[in-house]
View (cartoon, rainbow, N blue to C red):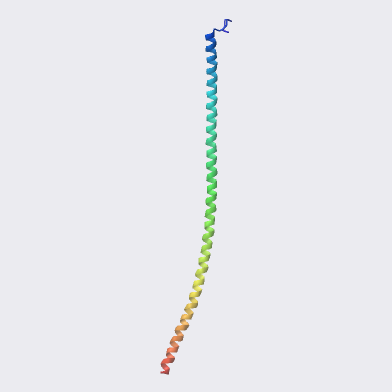
Length: 116
């Protein structure tokens, strides 16, 4: 009905229905835009949290790899040090054996020379 109490004409009813549908579409569009904006915000937050979690996890893995590498380096250093000590000890023994052999050769030659 219009303000004067008369019934609406069919054309007015169509315009009124069209206006109501336009309002509903606009409200639905606005609601959809709000839902979309909320979803985008949530996606950004999820991506940020995932990125941060990946960074923390990667940093933890990096630290673990470094710790393992340091352990391996210490083990290799200990092995190398042990091997170096062993080679040094064997070298000293061989030097002593060579010195004795040289003395034996010299003493033996002197004995040969004297016996000639």
